[in-house]
Image (tube, rainbow, N blue to C red; front, side, top):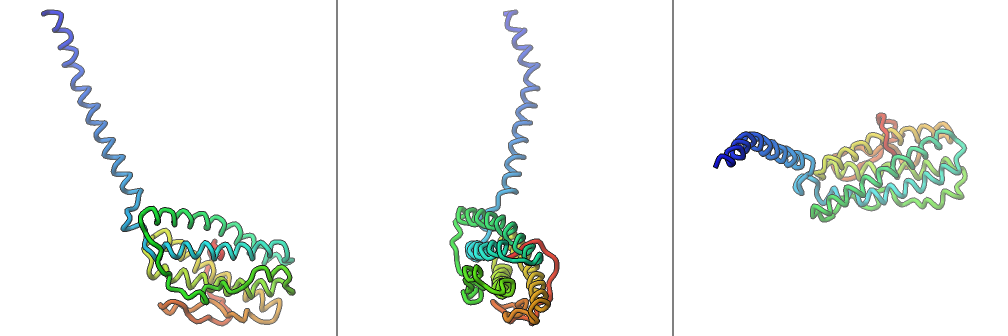
Amino acid sequence: MNRRFPMQSTFRRRRPLMLVFAIVAIFGALVVSGCGSDDEPTSSSSGNAVDLAFVQEMVTHHNSAVAMATVAQERTTRKEIKRLADDIVESQTAEIKQMQGIAKRLEADGVKAGELGVPEAMMGMSGDETMLEMADPFDREFIDMMVPHHQGAIVMARAVLKNGESAEVKELAQAIVTAQSREIGEMNSWRTTWYGAASPAGGVPEDTGETGGSMKDGGTEGSSGGHSM
């Protein structure tokens, strides 16, 4: 009988310690569970069909811009165009990966792509970048193709700002509007200096609150930004 007493005494001493460990383990599990729910968006808040349509269509739009900018890197002799082309290639290659990731997450959440609500003719995709390879004067043709391309990006971005739900997509879209407005102004300023007039496409599309918008002459409005279209 006496041999059992030390074991029972040891168990009694360890029991409070075991209880502490159990409480710590339960608390830790609750903390991890809470963090997980904050970091992982639910399907209802991650985005909608317009967000998915935007990132899918903007990937194609970005690829077109990168193709034009790659030609400009080889052909331009002006530092201004070279700088713009370098920025387009660098920033939009990264944004393509970002948007592809967003598309995968939205699809995993069960989101089905809908309509962005922007007519194809207003997306600025009518130019053929292969024409740039033989364009003369090159910089004028590059500007005349990239300005409407930027205008289309702004129209598309405003559509998702109005009808999308994803905070990440809207942040990207707003950056596009800001940066492309500035760059349209830059390109029209360069074209006026070098060739005597701004792009025939006009300037920054006016935000009418509806899909589309008219173009401002010269397109000098805009603020600093780091994205290029």
